[in-house]
Length: 222
Image (cartoon, rainbow, N blue to C red; front, side):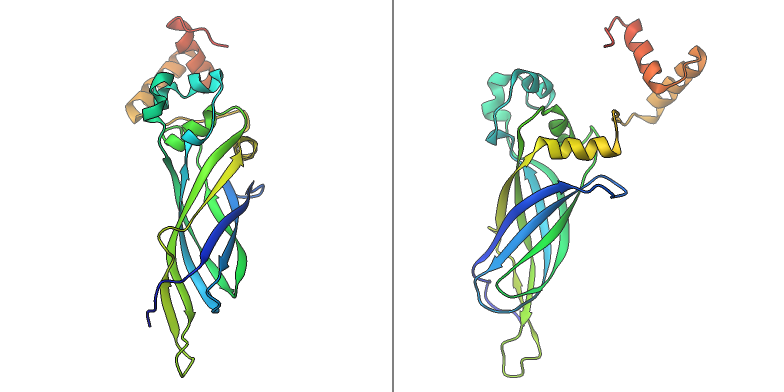
């Protein structure tokens, strides 16, 4: 049975933490959901789109240099600083009346082909301005005479929650899974050329291989 749109669904982010024991990099957002409609919510199938809103913070000189490849020269930032889609995720919220709290898993990647990862890597300190946009389906008990059915409603399209995530949380997560390392994806032919170069030179690691290439083209390796 379908009913009208639910009144008063409100979302807020209480905290975002790095999961210390996950097999892959994952942040966890602690959400508070409040429903002023007064009825018993049986469950919510919740979807979330997480965006980074870079225009909502300031940047020091080092950060501006690191973000050059994403946003261009600083004098263009009024036009180029736009929200970035970071990830999409979902969860199921168990039944509640009035208000509840739930954990939302935010699976992360350190892939530098992903714009969000490049942006986060460029930040030195401060916070990451996030905006979580919610959608999904709300299941409620049917208020009809029998009381045995369910009502189905949609999460209102304007449900969202902003949160300033400390950059330190992101760095803690990445250092736990990729201590003092990062990775880039190469075309298979390019990777084969690097592997051949490494073998012919007798180099013992990929770090040494890349350092040797940079030195030979005149780049200073720090």
